Amino acid sequence: MKTIMGKKETVIIGSGPGGYVAAIRAAQLGQKVTIIEKEYIGGVCLNVGCIPSKALVSAGNRYYEAIHSEVFGVRSTNVKIDFQKMQEWKDNKVIKPLTKGVEGLLKKNNVEIIRGTASFKNQKNLTVTTTEGEQEIEFENVVIATGSKPVELLNEPYVIPFGKRVVDTTGGLNIQEIPKHLIILGGGYVGTQLAGAFSNFGSKVTILEKDPKIISFFDDDLVQLVEKKFVEEEITVITDVTAAHSEETDTGVMIRYEANGVPSTVEGDYVLVTVGRKPNTDQLNLKKAGVELTASGKLTVTEQLKSTVPGIYGIGDVVPGRAFAHKASYEGKLVAEIISGGDAKVQEKAMPLAVYTEPELATVGMTLKEAEVSEIKHTISKFPMKANGRALSLNQPAGFIRLILHPDDEKVVGAQVAGAGAADLIAELALAIDMEMTAEDLARTIHAHPTLSETVTDAAELAIGFSIHF
Image (cartoon, rainbow, N blue to C red; front, side, top):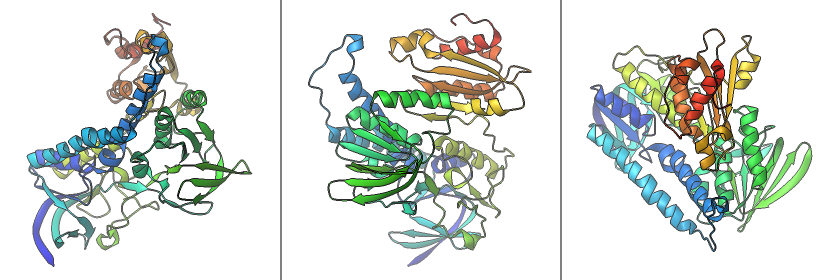
């Protein structure tokens, strides 16, 4: 049975970090908002992505530290991990409270929630399939925030279909046993983070990566720190993999692969496929709405996130750019303001990227590689974590902070952090870039002592020629 609903002012398709943020901000701005969600309130990131993966990383770190704290004079014996209890903690104490919290915030802001799958009937109408039948919704504005899904390798030269023991990120985060040997296909930010986590749990880990290096979107000197840690923890990294095929059994998986022209095999309990994601646009019937897509299936949008059809917008993973939850949230706030009549435009010069490896890595703005090939000779300031008291007291001296400055005015145009707390430290440097702050501005900012954030002061003082600690 099809129900014809009344006209909706603003409809958001998807309740992930882009969708729910867009819905709440639009409601705050006075819009009457309806959000349509087919599965998870909070989206992939909250339920089976960013948050549970960091919970897994944290649990792995706790277990590892419980065994390896002799440097502090702490010795422990017979340390055990209850992996199923850890999974229960992740699900019940981390994910569920946050999911309920998001749903509560939507309701508090009077956002109507429809559980169902949306598709376009035409440029002004949606069909929503629910457990009770179909609903037809007319809208003034619609924001597509449907996120992305894992890429499954089904075509030569990589044929590794998902199965019981070949899993995507969702399956990998919900494994109920510690694998004796985990094979990870893809050495990007998801693959490297989970490699470290499962290694800390005691798994043997092998990474197969098609590129010449892992996490290739970071500068080489940052990546080398992670590679060094992987060597210490006996995590095997095989790069330049040009072909791979899986053979799954009830008890394990064999991967036949070719690297640098040499055929080889590797066997493990599970294969975790983390080779990328593709936008969830194929089931939306966007052709019926006349929305133009790129070759990769993303919406073609303007600087105001407007598609090629008036009243239809896109944010997050379904529009060009990296698939970051914080990018989606930023664009969600922006699109709500634009629908309300604002003239803001997307400005992503200070979009940070962080990966929770050991050590943590983070970057924002211009990279070192970009600075080196630039026609302008930028000023580079690099301060080591081993000269920071807080880093030493944490027994985490590996890493550094780097500032990249424009030579004319010493404004910060890029920054990288490797080491303890890098994912948090990068926020101050993103602000510095966004506010066009100079090295002197950072040097004059008082930081609490002893903190990791003092490295920002030290790097800035080094840049202006008045270093105290280096």
